[in-house]
Image (cartoon, rainbow, N blue to C red; front, top):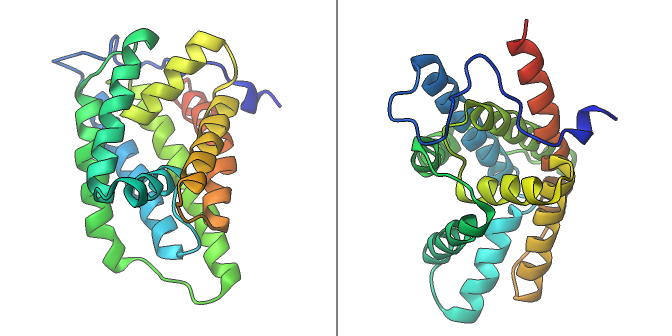
Length: 217
């Protein structure tokens, strides 16, 4: 399908001209923050569903088991390594790269106490699927703002540009690779991990398609 074959982040009338923009338009910053807020909310919904952590958390857990470092420290170090990989991929940082960490972490802390914690297995799975869709739509908003991606999304877009393959495919391959590494190192996986790994790429592609379509009207 055309929606899932998108090979670049669309440019709209509210997209920034460049990631490193010190005076972006208010509408661009607003939509960037809205996208990051939705991203964090989607992550919270997945955590609250309690049927599996996201792939990158699985990797952090596995590395933590083998190094003795905390998952938080591993997450920080992993982000730093990924940012170094940006150099050969020619990715650029921006205020979105910084706000990515701040806003998503804040939303996770603020939203988790107020979200539903389903009791039935079906409800847990459905909430995980919905959370994955919210993450995809939020990612689309903040990536189209073009004010700098987060470390992992920057890795995704960099690899996409280098290979010319669809964004959905690159994202799925990245997430599955991370799951395999995390599981091999001793990380814990669940059905939610699998749903996110195989669903977030198509969800992002759907989000990119519909956000760009709405913006052109």
